[in-house]
Length: 101
Image (cartoon, rainbow, N blue to C red):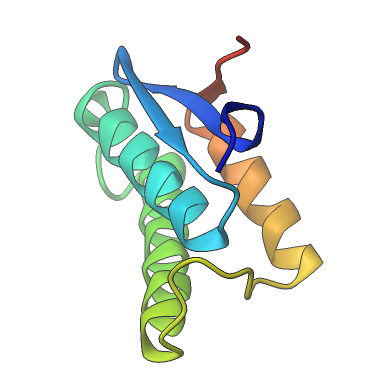
């Protein structure tokens, strides 16, 4: 895959380079959420509104990743447009950043 087709994300001050597959994007989202959980999220009680929201969001991401694994899809796009929009919102909610070259 050419360099132009690769995406770069900054997750916990680490540059992550992936292709455009939905599974890879979900992996970056999961890493971003885990990073948030250990930093900002560590300050919140689990029974707070944001704590409960994180748990629900994390569960949804895990479900989608499991769905992709069950389908045997690793490098293809399998998420619906609405699901991708939701995942983009989650990415921004938990402090995710896409790096520009």
